[in-house]
Length: 402
Picture 1 (cartoon, one colour):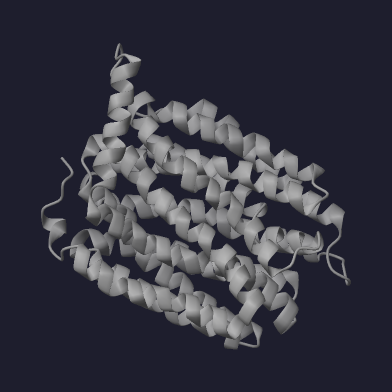
Picture 2: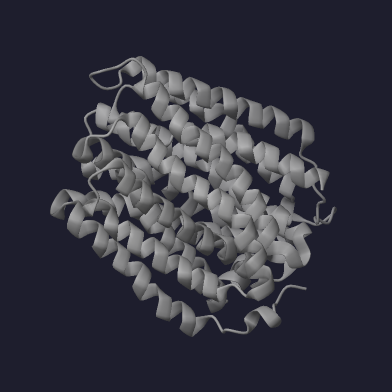
């Protein structure tokens, strides 16, 4: 359990660093640099595009070369990349830095989840949820703190030095995560020594092929993918909508996102335990419904308290989906390929997360909030019958894990 606690502590610092540089600071910084809705969506979503390309290879690589080496590579990016924000003066540079910063979660995320799945046994839903919730605490603190720094002492909107102060704090937290990781991250490796490069490459390909050929794993991962499409759009445009349409402050915009994260954080461990004992499908379906309804309602809310209510409902729906989907994928996968499974899960997760702000930016710029948000929410409702068809109701009783 000491290894699990160390993993949670490092994850907290890494997520805090990443959150400071992301929301609500990132979309507002892009706006400050002169970006329109489509460009804001790209800036928010581009780091997640990185995960689409690198999460699956990173997870599969950890099955072959070891978890610790791969996790430390991700922590190096967490520690180094935030310093690059201090030198940004154009939108193009912001997009480039965001793409590279995305390597941090692309490498570290699926491998750390595989480590938790390695040790969780029958408690995958609960322990993956606890691990995720600790990371969410870091994300929770990052949003309002970033918003507070931007809002402090300014009447005409944030200025450049305030953005750079947020990024400096992000850099310090990233370095702390790296230093602590170097000192404390020791995990039980499953790598055989003396195995040649050709055999490692064969196992790397085998892990990816086995995971991607399982329709149930792909379908279960896709449910979090579509949920994250709306989460990515909400992350990008809730602050912009709250500030530019409703007239809230940057600090209030940060509180809205923070409140959503609080509900998710507090609900996930309990929902994970429920999914371990009573099945994962009902929670995923209920979560998709709650996320769809609340997301569609956001552009019809005109005050802080109504937006807060929509954010809270969305946070609960997110907890229901995310507490069960990763555990479901682990249930379906053979133990030696947990890294590949979490990588595939993370890749599909990121396809949704990246497409959300990019698609949201295009739709908002074209049709406005009140048409775009309900249109995107309809994807969640359409995904439910597909999930029920391709993931058998009783698979939890006969998992592939061995």
